[in-house]
Image 1: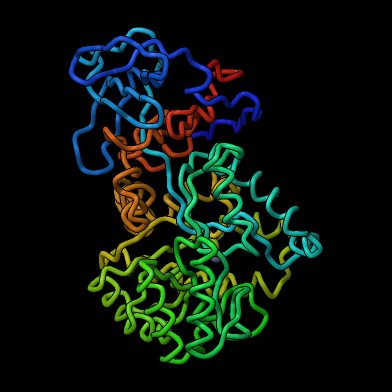
Image 2: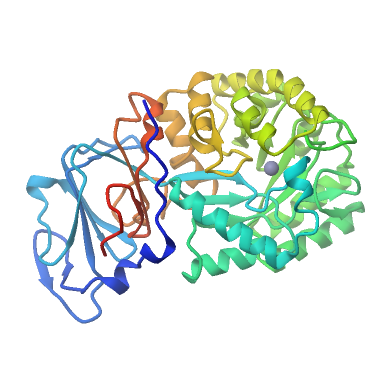
Length: 444
Ligand SMILES: [Zn+2]
């Protein structure tokens, strides 16, 4: 299956439906279309597509999906779902409609060792924020309508999240963990030591606007020092950090590849692990029992990423660490799937980064299927499961009445073959068409 070309639209073509469409009718439920009022939100009707039921409900073939303002107001068979007068109709015949994808491990300001990272050494925070805004836009256009940031610099993520929420910047919905909290010398940027040191930085991050807390409790592939399998935090530091976050209603996820560090974090109530490179079966069983999340980021250690590492000029020592980690990482993922651990999709690459002939987000889902998931389970890891992890399941994660109209269209059925995700050619976020490859310019 060939990937459709990325014909990204210029920003000027992106136009909020509510501002650009004449509000001619409001849909009142049932079969009655009510008269328009000057402030009625415009109605958009996606007509003729197959709505893929990622939440286990019934697939709706030849459907009509009505969107009013930001949200979905009705879904039904096209022949029994009237389209209100004046609605904007977007034909979807022959297309499969899935909820917008969710990528749960992203750094929009990513810098890695190598030539590309070296060129960003002198980057200022304002420059970084603008680079991140560009990456946010490309993420949305690639089909990712919600993402979780798990480590950015100096509050750039909070500024970007606000700008997107205000409609000043085009991008996905963002939940963010602020800076990565670490014991001094660890894999991240915000160092602390001792239980009160950790309590303080957690409170600072929450005060700045963090939706999550991200800590690094073992080393990383990109470190030049320290072992991925070490567990450098003390019990006191770990327990106080998690307690302070939980007392504020904030969940904690940990960059972790070490079973020893995982055992310690599980004891004190950690909510999730990122990567999980070397986690053994006993840890995975405990995660399953406690409902702890795994965000695998499997793409970063598999051969599809080599093209990327060569492009950014990764040094030989880095490529060697990727290779050594890759075999364990793959075995861990297969074990986690077999044991039924909660998995939410995340890439640790830009969501749109080319990987194995598609994007990193789609390649990640394909690898889950290769490692043992059904195509539906892989799709759920990027939709319903991610929404549940973020406690956003009332708003996103499926095409359902009442949720945001975050909708992606495909040329084929992803439940039959996950590679259908390679054909993403239409992206709507909150009722606004961000991309439609079938048109030169979005018409509204
Ligand atoms: Zn990361």
